[in-house]
Length: 109
Image (cartoon, rainbow, N blue to C red):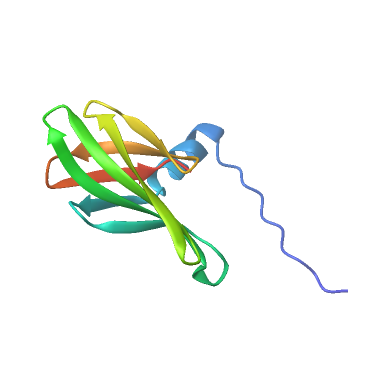
């Protein structure tokens, strides 16, 4: 009978939580830059986000592009500049910094 190695995680829950936060994906989008949030089987359906900049000093805009096959639609979403987190396609993103030129987001999952 082959032996199997079993590894137990003995790290305290507080330390585990901090590791998860530091391992979350952080990315910066420039104005007009696109990032794919979700891609379907064989890329037939996609959800993308595009940073659209700031229409005024207190608001920033992110466009959501949803497509399936040859059909799709876009949503232009507006958020207050002082937002600390936003929800896009059932995912929570922390807003780390925002300017008219770029935005830095961190995925919470």
